[in-house]
Length: 332
Image (tube, rainbow, N blue to C red):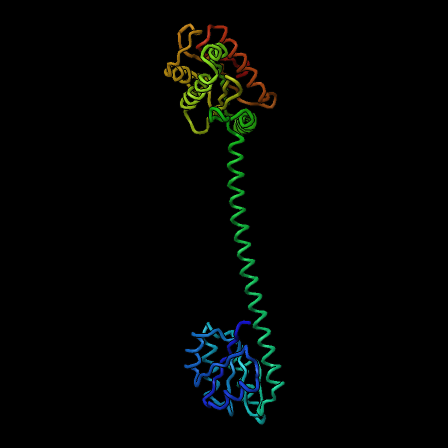
């Protein structure tokens, strides 16, 4: 069992021995101080459970010493008991309580009363220690939970990001495109600004895979995805892999001319890659692009953007590929 320390403030040496005899507790060690200043010095060296001020008559010096001990942050919460003569006047008792005493012991001391009262404070001290230990343990667990919560949130963010990306090209995937097309459509509907959509298709890509192999095909897709991404003009523009060899780009607040400018940049960027493709008329890999632009209204839907862009893409394919075509609703 851990030893408990009790501070006895007393200028008479014989009293300390008498208290030790009366307590008869091997787990309690009394530490003596002759003054308030010495008591403060002892408090720096020990963790006291209780302070006993042993005085014949608690006069001004004893009370001042108690007040001095109470003034220290380290000792202000340690219980103080005055040990005095039974014939003490009430005024003196009140003065002791005013200086911070929690109880009195009257001489001659009766062993069972002494042990009982001190035992109460020892038990309270034990309970405070247990509570403090449980509080520290709880704080530690709360900290662990906060760390785990943060790690979980970070992993969720990572998983959310990964779930929005195409694993091969690193561009956004079809799911992300579908969600954001609807979001941008609603935004354009509120602000009454044009919304443009591009659909990009790699020319003769099936033949490219058959001729050069799927590993070369995957490498081609990665390079082409980067070229398409670099053709975008603003951070708000979104490009995604729509599926297979098709890509889509959402261009918020972009008119016809802006959409065609981005599409032309894409065609040029892909040409700049100079990826060989013997099945192409130019001898290199090319793309065809369909564009459309709408100012959303209540009679329109986001699906119409896809329909018009797909129609424009078919026109580009029929025109010989490696080109762009546009289609717009009559009111646009």
